[in-house]
Length: 405
Image (tube, rainbow, N blue to C red; front, side):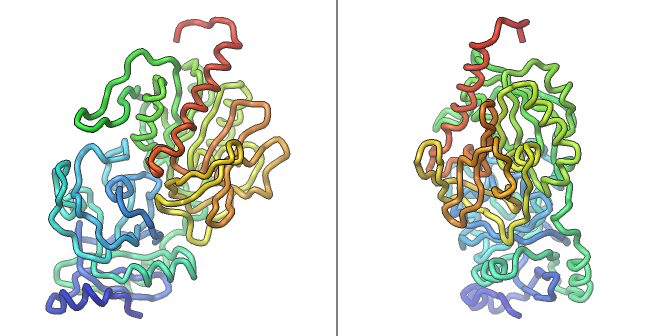
């Protein structure tokens, strides 16, 4: 089966193939290598965003995955140090590879500091261009997200039988516990706020509340949104105990995004979340944090056929009656049919009707599946951070004074 993009193939007819992606079912896709040389294996997904490729490629939630970009022109604005989302700068902590239609061009943007090809090499990310990404996307939509091996070598000589065997042996994302691979190994404070044009990132002054953020693969812009909302943030590892969290006297606890199967991460995370909920501390979760909260409250999670990956996903908020344009990146979802009676569904995808938000009745506990910090809309969902702050304010006003935090 050939998925070479006809336009790219015609333009580069004299160039030999230097890269390939081999799916577990034996499909071989050849093209032109970009980024790092070598091989990487993972689950192939597609992302429909037309911008923000650097943020996507550094989102720890993509750990163990190969991203197919449906937008043809990736790399036009180059890369810069400000748009990196991961707080863990280890090259192996995120995406395994990327699939592009067009070749990477010279960057044209005043913020660019490096071209995407050099940046991919520096981060050890293997890429392939010249692929009919629309055909690959259709394949994923019809058959689900396949495991694959992506390979790049200048001589273009590949052992396709060996690559197929390696792809077939690639572990399933179901049952994969990946949060430990991307989380911080020690606690740290965060005070950087959102980016302002021509000024850069502001530093926080006089925060009102203390939030402990559990890092399952947290993104920098989530931390900036919390800081901009008036929160002094302490980030703790994914495996922090409830005692370690509560001993910090937080006004609120945040459960971050992250990669892998929530049921696997839940083996150690769910008892912690239940204890925090039982302590009455306001709690807010995003993406994997949403799925973990759903599990902790008695629900189930399910593997989606091709997931949601993009920045143009409409979501209905039942609490306001408004539709938000959201950014999403998830391959698992909370099964609404499994939610107990004390858990209310608050948001739903208008693409496929899947669950996108919950809250615990009578408690300051809520979560959403999508990424409000990723600025689709561009700020349709920033109210969620303010909602979290209002919950902390209400709890603080209802309690007697406590020791200074």
